[in-house]
Length: 219
Image (cartoon, rainbow, N blue to C red):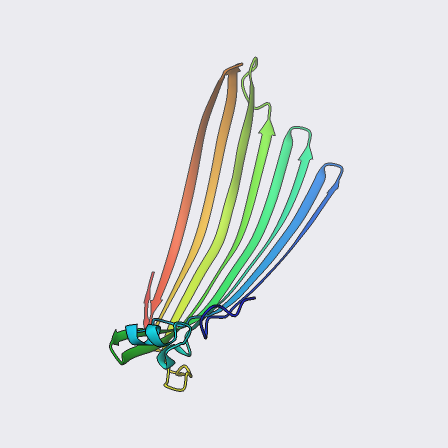
Protein backbone atom coordinates (compact mmCIF):
# COMPACT_ATOMS: atom_id res chain seq x y z
CA UNK A 1 0.00 0.00 0.00
CA UNK A 2 1.21 3.50 -0.85
CA UNK A 3 -0.38 6.94 -0.75
CA UNK A 4 1.63 8.15 -3.75
CA UNK A 5 3.53 11.38 -4.36
CA UNK A 6 0.53 13.35 -5.54
CA UNK A 7 -2.94 13.78 -4.10
CA UNK A 8 -5.40 11.13 -5.27
CA UNK A 9 -2.62 8.71 -6.32
CA UNK A 10 -2.94 5.97 -3.68
CA UNK A 11 -2.31 2.35 -4.63
CA UNK A 12 -3.60 -0.69 -2.72
CA UNK A 13 -2.58 -4.21 -3.72
CA UNK A 14 -3.11 -7.69 -2.33
CA UNK A 15 -2.10 -11.18 -3.37
CA UNK A 16 -2.66 -14.70 -2.10
CA UNK A 17 -2.00 -18.23 -3.32
CA UNK A 18 -2.23 -21.83 -2.16
CA UNK A 19 -0.75 -25.06 -3.50
CA UNK A 20 -1.60 -28.63 -2.43
CA UNK A 21 0.20 -31.66 -3.86
CA UNK A 22 -0.42 -35.31 -2.96
CA UNK A 23 0.83 -38.63 -4.34
CA UNK A 24 -0.19 -42.19 -3.55
CA UNK A 25 1.30 -45.08 -5.46
CA UNK A 26 0.59 -44.62 -9.17
CA UNK A 27 -1.81 -41.73 -8.58
CA UNK A 28 -1.05 -38.07 -8.00
CA UNK A 29 -3.14 -34.93 -7.72
CA UNK A 30 -2.45 -31.27 -7.11
CA UNK A 31 -4.54 -28.15 -6.59
CA UNK A 32 -3.48 -24.55 -7.08
CA UNK A 33 -5.25 -21.27 -6.50
CA UNK A 34 -4.30 -17.59 -6.57
CA UNK A 35 -5.98 -14.23 -6.13
CA UNK A 36 -4.82 -10.69 -6.94
CA UNK A 37 -6.43 -7.34 -6.10
CA UNK A 38 -5.39 -3.80 -6.95
CA UNK A 39 -7.02 -0.39 -6.52
CA UNK A 40 -5.30 2.66 -7.95
CA UNK A 41 -6.37 6.30 -7.87
CA UNK A 42 -5.44 8.20 -11.04
CA UNK A 43 -4.63 11.90 -10.43
CA UNK A 44 -4.65 12.95 -14.11
CA UNK A 45 -2.68 15.67 -15.82
CA UNK A 46 -1.85 19.18 -14.61
CA UNK A 47 -1.52 22.39 -16.58
CA UNK A 48 1.70 24.40 -16.58
CA UNK A 49 0.28 26.90 -14.08
CA UNK A 50 -0.90 24.10 -11.78
CA UNK A 51 2.52 22.45 -11.91
CA UNK A 52 4.16 25.73 -11.01
CA UNK A 53 1.82 26.22 -8.07
CA UNK A 54 1.71 22.71 -6.56
CA UNK A 55 3.12 19.66 -8.32
CA UNK A 56 1.36 17.31 -5.87
CA UNK A 57 -2.16 18.64 -6.38
CA UNK A 58 -4.98 17.02 -8.35
CA UNK A 59 -7.33 18.84 -10.70
CA UNK A 60 -10.94 18.54 -9.51
CA UNK A 61 -12.05 17.11 -12.84
CA UNK A 62 -9.91 13.98 -12.18
CA UNK A 63 -10.90 13.49 -8.55
CA UNK A 64 -13.14 10.48 -9.34
CA UNK A 65 -10.69 8.64 -11.62
CA UNK A 66 -9.64 5.19 -10.44
CA UNK A 67 -8.83 1.69 -11.64
CA UNK A 68 -9.90 -1.39 -9.65
CA UNK A 69 -9.05 -4.93 -10.77
CA UNK A 70 -9.53 -8.41 -9.32
CA UNK A 71 -8.10 -11.63 -10.76
CA UNK A 72 -8.44 -15.24 -9.66
CA UNK A 73 -7.19 -18.59 -10.91
CA UNK A 74 -7.76 -22.17 -9.78
CA UNK A 75 -6.58 -25.47 -11.26
CA UNK A 76 -6.89 -29.13 -10.32
CA UNK A 77 -4.65 -31.80 -11.85
CA UNK A 78 -5.06 -35.55 -11.46
CA UNK A 79 -2.69 -38.11 -12.94
CA UNK A 80 -2.35 -41.86 -13.00
CA UNK A 81 0.46 -44.05 -14.33
CA UNK A 82 0.11 -47.80 -14.78
CA UNK A 83 2.46 -49.99 -16.77
CA UNK A 84 2.67 -48.48 -20.28
CA UNK A 85 -0.27 -46.12 -19.81
CA UNK A 86 -0.23 -42.58 -18.36
CA UNK A 87 -3.22 -40.26 -18.11
CA UNK A 88 -3.57 -36.69 -16.82
CA UNK A 89 -6.77 -34.70 -16.29
CA UNK A 90 -6.54 -30.92 -15.82
CA UNK A 91 -9.46 -28.66 -14.87
CA UNK A 92 -8.99 -24.89 -14.65
CA UNK A 93 -11.01 -21.76 -13.91
CA UNK A 94 -9.92 -18.14 -14.32
CA UNK A 95 -11.88 -14.95 -13.63
CA UNK A 96 -11.19 -11.24 -13.84
CA UNK A 97 -13.26 -8.15 -13.05
CA UNK A 98 -12.33 -4.52 -13.51
CA UNK A 99 -13.89 -1.12 -12.98
CA UNK A 100 -12.15 1.91 -14.43
CA UNK A 101 -13.45 5.46 -14.12
CA UNK A 102 -11.56 7.81 -16.40
CA UNK A 103 -11.76 11.45 -17.46
CA UNK A 104 -10.57 12.48 -20.92
CA UNK A 105 -9.55 16.10 -21.42
CA UNK A 106 -11.03 17.16 -24.77
CA UNK A 107 -10.02 20.84 -24.56
CA UNK A 108 -8.94 23.22 -21.79
CA UNK A 109 -11.74 23.06 -19.22
CA UNK A 110 -13.75 20.56 -21.32
CA UNK A 111 -13.77 16.90 -20.36
CA UNK A 112 -15.66 13.66 -20.86
CA UNK A 113 -15.96 11.16 -18.00
CA UNK A 114 -16.94 7.49 -18.39
CA UNK A 115 -16.93 4.30 -16.36
CA UNK A 116 -15.89 0.98 -17.91
CA UNK A 117 -16.85 -2.31 -16.29
CA UNK A 118 -15.17 -5.40 -17.65
CA UNK A 119 -15.49 -9.02 -16.62
CA UNK A 120 -13.92 -12.08 -18.19
CA UNK A 121 -13.74 -15.75 -17.36
CA UNK A 122 -12.56 -19.06 -18.70
CA UNK A 123 -13.39 -22.66 -17.82
CA UNK A 124 -11.43 -25.50 -19.36
CA UNK A 125 -10.92 -29.24 -19.17
CA UNK A 126 -7.99 -31.14 -20.71
CA UNK A 127 -7.35 -34.88 -20.89
CA UNK A 128 -3.96 -36.14 -22.07
CA UNK A 129 -2.96 -39.79 -22.40
CA UNK A 130 0.23 -41.54 -23.44
CA UNK A 131 1.08 -45.14 -24.25
CA UNK A 132 4.68 -46.39 -24.41
CA UNK A 133 6.13 -49.07 -26.70
CA UNK A 134 3.80 -48.34 -29.60
CA UNK A 135 6.46 -48.48 -32.35
CA UNK A 136 7.52 -51.26 -34.69
CA UNK A 137 9.73 -54.09 -33.33
CA UNK A 138 13.34 -53.03 -32.89
CA UNK A 139 12.53 -49.40 -32.01
CA UNK A 140 10.87 -47.57 -29.14
CA UNK A 141 8.01 -45.14 -29.38
CA UNK A 142 5.23 -43.33 -27.59
CA UNK A 143 1.70 -42.40 -28.58
CA UNK A 144 0.14 -39.28 -27.06
CA UNK A 145 -3.49 -38.31 -27.55
CA UNK A 146 -6.07 -36.17 -25.82
CA UNK A 147 -8.91 -33.67 -25.93
CA UNK A 148 -9.37 -30.05 -24.84
CA UNK A 149 -12.64 -28.25 -24.20
CA UNK A 150 -13.08 -24.71 -22.92
CA UNK A 151 -15.47 -21.79 -22.73
CA UNK A 152 -14.23 -18.19 -22.64
CA UNK A 153 -16.25 -15.03 -22.12
CA UNK A 154 -15.63 -11.30 -21.83
CA UNK A 155 -18.24 -8.60 -21.15
CA UNK A 156 -17.64 -4.84 -21.32
CA UNK A 157 -20.08 -2.07 -20.36
CA UNK A 158 -19.54 1.70 -20.66
CA UNK A 159 -21.53 4.20 -18.58
CA UNK A 160 -21.47 7.99 -18.34
CA UNK A 161 -20.47 9.48 -14.99
CA UNK A 162 -22.18 12.48 -13.41
CA UNK A 163 -20.39 15.53 -12.00
CA UNK A 164 -20.94 13.96 -8.56
CA UNK A 165 -18.95 10.88 -9.61
CA UNK A 166 -21.87 8.43 -9.84
CA UNK A 167 -22.10 6.12 -12.89
CA UNK A 168 -25.40 6.16 -14.75
CA UNK A 169 -27.70 3.15 -14.65
CA UNK A 170 -28.15 3.43 -18.43
CA UNK A 171 -25.08 2.20 -20.36
CA UNK A 172 -23.88 4.00 -23.48
CA UNK A 173 -22.39 0.83 -24.93
CA UNK A 174 -22.04 -2.87 -24.18
CA UNK A 175 -20.15 -5.70 -25.87
CA UNK A 176 -20.11 -9.38 -24.92
CA UNK A 177 -18.00 -12.09 -26.57
CA UNK A 178 -18.32 -15.82 -25.85
CA UNK A 179 -16.29 -18.67 -27.33
CA UNK A 180 -16.60 -22.45 -27.17
CA UNK A 181 -13.55 -24.49 -28.18
CA UNK A 182 -13.20 -28.23 -28.68
CA UNK A 183 -9.97 -29.88 -29.81
CA UNK A 184 -8.59 -33.37 -30.25
CA UNK A 185 -5.07 -34.47 -31.11
CA UNK A 186 -2.78 -37.48 -31.46
CA UNK A 187 1.00 -37.71 -31.90
CA UNK A 188 3.25 -40.71 -32.48
CA UNK A 189 6.97 -40.60 -31.63
CA UNK A 190 9.37 -43.27 -32.91
CA UNK A 191 13.05 -43.51 -31.98
CA UNK A 192 14.75 -45.18 -34.94
CA UNK A 193 18.26 -44.64 -33.59
CA UNK A 194 20.20 -43.09 -30.71
CA UNK A 195 20.11 -39.69 -32.44
CA UNK A 196 17.02 -39.86 -34.63
CA UNK A 197 13.39 -39.53 -33.57
CA UNK A 198 10.51 -39.38 -36.01
CA UNK A 199 7.16 -37.87 -35.11
CA UNK A 200 3.81 -37.48 -36.81
CA UNK A 201 0.64 -35.95 -35.50
CA UNK A 202 -2.82 -34.71 -36.26
CA UNK A 203 -5.00 -32.11 -34.53
CA UNK A 204 -8.54 -30.83 -34.99
CA UNK A 205 -9.94 -27.62 -33.52
CA UNK A 206 -13.55 -26.50 -33.50
CA UNK A 207 -14.55 -22.94 -32.53
CA UNK A 208 -17.93 -21.35 -31.99
CA UNK A 209 -18.01 -17.61 -31.30
CA UNK A 210 -20.91 -15.42 -30.24
CA UNK A 211 -20.75 -11.62 -30.28
CA UNK A 212 -23.42 -9.50 -28.60
CA UNK A 213 -23.34 -5.76 -29.38
CA UNK A 214 -26.26 -3.94 -27.83
CA UNK A 215 -29.37 -5.64 -29.22
CA UNK A 216 -27.51 -7.49 -31.98
CA UNK A 217 -26.17 -11.03 -31.76
CA UNK A 218 -23.65 -12.49 -34.23
CA UNK A 219 -22.42 -16.11 -34.38
